[in-house]
Length: 69
Image (cartoon, rainbow, N blue to C red; front, side, top):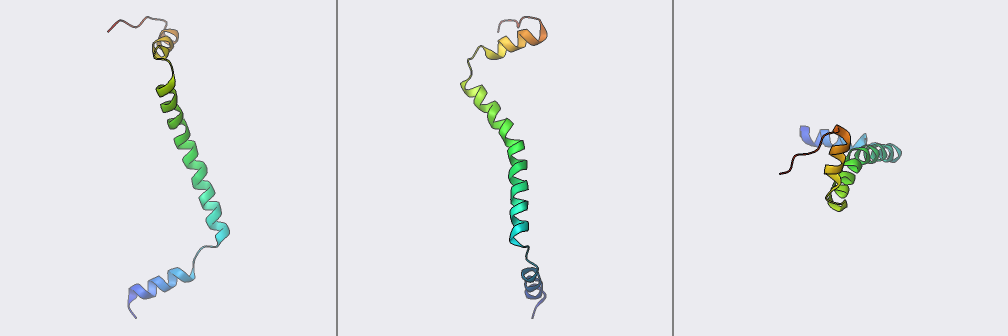
């Protein structure tokens, strides 16, 4: 018996319970949603919003007009 087969047998005998796997999967799903939902939302707004929206937002937030060009 080699060390690799011994380590593999040990790893299989200590497998995580299904309930723990489900909770880890749920945590990963929530964290990935928190990260990627705003990114996808910003892309959707940029893709489907009117083209005049960024210039309108800039003039409202800074109080100065954007120079042409």
